[in-house]
Image (cartoon, rainbow, N blue to C red; front, side, top):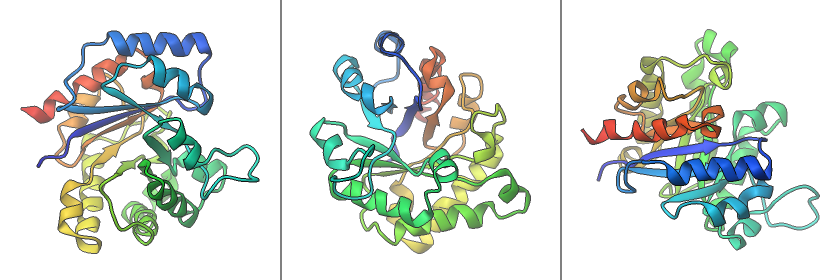
Length: 253
């Protein structure tokens, strides 16, 4: 079975109630490939999750941008996996580079979060990626392998995991990894999964690309054999998100 193309829209810390309703209307009105061609997940801030879930078309799903590392309780300001499950939110993004870099989330902490979210029945978009310094020093593959290894040490079943490769130097900067650069890292990640987990997991796990993806570059990126979709930032707040979803057609042909 081929890997179904997957596109996530990470809205980050953006939006008012009116803006959110407008974005959802654009998504609901959009002509996009069918569910058997592309799986679509959008990720608004926590406070808008129920609103978006209620208004969004049924073939699109909703993700939280983060969740707490264990069962809820006296953790002020956190949202637990159990709360997300209770709200009927199926997906969560974990280990985004902004949280790793700004909030100091370590590989181990991210891995614990992934494992706990999965244990509660959530599906996880697990983010990995290198900084500009790491890329320039030639340690990209080493860095993303270490990030993936931490998760692999805590997770035995990969059915509900999507890996998002996001080169930190390309997030929100307008710089994009070239299709060849993206393909190279995705290929290396898949090779790592094959060698360290299993050929089956390597063949079935979707590895998506994030980092200044837009309507203009998505088609060429989607054409790379090991790029199974996108985690889109800024462009997911704009109508061009629909164009990015249409790039899934490339895989069909």
